[in-house]
Image (cartoon, rainbow, N blue to C red):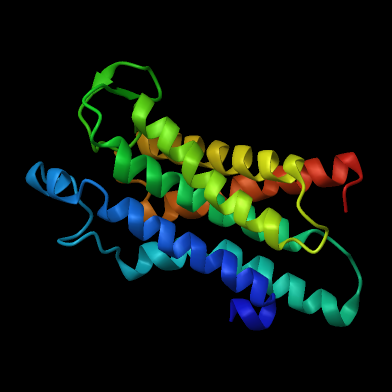
Length: 207
């Protein structure tokens, strides 16, 4: 669907995201499993989590496809698509690699907490989150029709990283209380990052 609604380049970004997130999931897996900090039994995600993480990207792909016929509003849909994936990849790297750090703090009050808790952040996790977003950003930049642009790399990376922080906040405030599911938190984090990027694009005349 992404290849049809977007292009082959969109699909390549999606594949790099999938491969890198799989790498993050399998990294230090035995250590995570020994502490019961892994996702599922072998790192697998629920179907609902995958759906919520992907829905923003699918909406953007659909808007891009519609615009090829209507030409009503030309926009940087590919960049927004990359941002939506950068958020998810950033969160995946943060949660999968960050849990190996013993010094974890709750994002809302920065008090020490246990690894693996929703809203927990660590230095290792934050570095991993930045790297996860960067992987998607650099892939997008190389595949962009406008050519490689370091500013786009920085912007997509930062928006992905910011989305990861939103994910942690929502996790600490509402997921831990059972008011939001993990999938819903992923969706909202991606949505708010893409919305913020859209507002920045419009306010700067970048569309």
